[in-house]
Length: 51
Image (tube, rainbow, N blue to C red):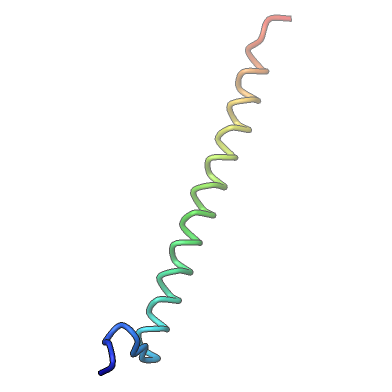
């Protein structure tokens, strides 16, 4: 008897790849914005420091 989880149809595999790519792209976009926000914060704080 074959388990349904073992039967990976090409459509399921392709759907899983698309979900993985979308998730990875989301993490990259979020991480890039987080890094850009940190750099902006450094410039903002550096501009307002008393010398």
